[in-house]
Each structure stands twice: as structure tokens, then as C-alpha cells.
Amino acid sequence: MSSVLVQPQTANIMNAVMCGLMSFGLLMTPQKFMQGGQYQNPWFSNIPENRDNKLYYVGQLMAFLMLGGCVVPTLISPNSQFLCYQMVTIHVVNLIQTLVFMCTDKFKDAKPDTATGKGQWYFMTVLSAIFGLVTMLACVHPTDNVVDSRETYLSKSLANTVMLVFSSTFGVMFTLFPQHLLSMFWDEEQEDPQDEAPVAQVAPKKFMGFKLLNLTDLERWWSLCIGTTILGLNFGMLLDWNIAQPLYTAGSLTTVSTLTLLNMHQVTMRPYKSISSRHVWMSWLPNLLMSGAMAGILASALLYV
Image (cartoon, rainbow, N blue to C red; front, side):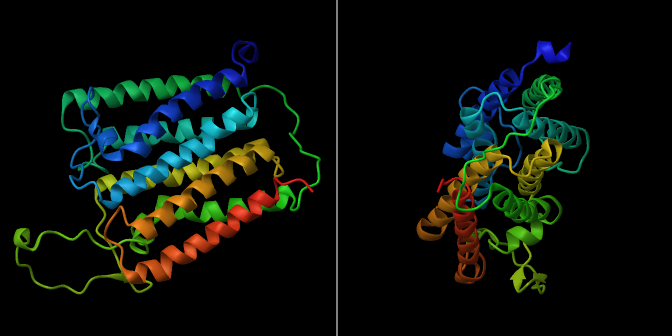
């Protein structure tokens, strides 16, 4: 009965609209998005005032994940049940994360401190649960594996396998070790010397030669969202049980390409501060090379001979 009530196209379009609205605001004006814009209350507490804070880069990264993982693939194949597998995983994990965020003190310094701000979260939690239920009902259709039999320069099985390993590495790091990962790319935010109180000098802890950052709860929250989103998209491949899934190849190419351009923009234009020459040479440039190579592999699996 549920398979008659909810078609994959319905769930995919609903999810794409939600992700599109959220990602556009987060991509264009991440600070204003977190502050609630003109008509909403702030979604978080202790939002950095400086627009060049690294938190807003992390927010833009999340926006590109939503675009490449949901919006663009839906435009390519709105009837795909594979997208339902990916999004139902993300909805379930997001619901758990939100309950932890609102009902515990794990991210207490990031939680909104106004009744209206909390009400926004409760409303979005209920809405996300509804979207998750609709997507779950759209997952029950019997379906055959989607296979693109036309010859390409590289097989989609190979490209998708490499992408799963590549992206899952970052997904695990963002989820379990955000402090170590971000410390490889960023330095501590520099405060105004006039505002700094004299403190005793303590040798900073280091990881692979980089000083470990003191992450805020807000940075840890967004890092967790990024990590679980990456892993959720990859877990959808396991549910689909089709390593040659062409839609995963196309969505991954979109995500990797846009993130590579974002990182290149950060290195050349420095819209976000607090990266040193050491960070650029030891982390940013190698990451650009790896991402460029990954984009080339994915593109080769989509180009027909």
C-alpha cells in the first residue's frame, strides 16, 4: 500500500526543494543564514561576528554537499530510488543529531537561547521527520540495478569505489576527529591584541606538526553535520547494492568539482582568514591535487568513448 501512496519522484522532489532552499542561503550568506535572516531568529548562539571566520567556510562546504548530493542528482533522475536510500539515511541520522543537539549539553554553547529560536528547531525537527517518513515509504519499491552499459574511459565501478574510499575518509574525520582535521587546514582565530588578557604561555598540543585548534561547539556541530552527510550518501550505495550506480558518479563529480573550486578560491583569494603558508603547502595544495585527480577519475567514468 505504501508503494502506491509514495513514489520516489515525490520524495526526491520534496528533498531537493528543502536542500535547495537551505543550501542556497548557506552558500550565499552563511552568517545571515545562521542568524535567521530578516524574518527568523538566530538558529544558534555565539555566532561569530566576523564574516571571514572559518565557520562560514565550513557552512559553505555543507551547502555544496547538499547541492551535489541531492539537488543536482534529482534534476538528472527525479525517479531514482537510489536517491531515496541516500536521503532516508541522512534524515534518520539528522533526526538523532538534532535530538542530541536540543536535548543534551553536548553542544550547549551553540544552542539557541531564545524561546523563538528553540521553536524554530522543534518545527524543523517535526518537518524533517515527516520528510524522512515520506522518503522511507518511497524506498519500498522493487527495483532493478540501474546500469549504464555504454563504454566510458573508466568504469563507473572503479570510479565509485575510489570515491567511496576518498570521501569516507573525510566523512570519518569530520565525524570523529574534527579537531584534528580542521587543525590541518586552519590556525586559531587572531584576536585584537588590545582585547587579549595576559595569560601564562602553555605549549600547545600538536597533530602532525599542526597546532590543535580549540573548536567551538558551533564548529563541532557543523563538522558533525558534514561528516554524517558524507557517510549517509555513501551508505545509500550500500543499500542500493550497485557499485556501478551512474547517479552516484554524477553527483560525486558535482560535489568534488565545486568543492575543489571553493578550496582554490580560498587559497588564492583568502576570503576566510587564519591559514598560514604552512597550512597552504602541507594541506590545502595537496588536497587540491587529490580533489582534482578525483574529479578527473569521476569525469572519465562519465565520458563516453
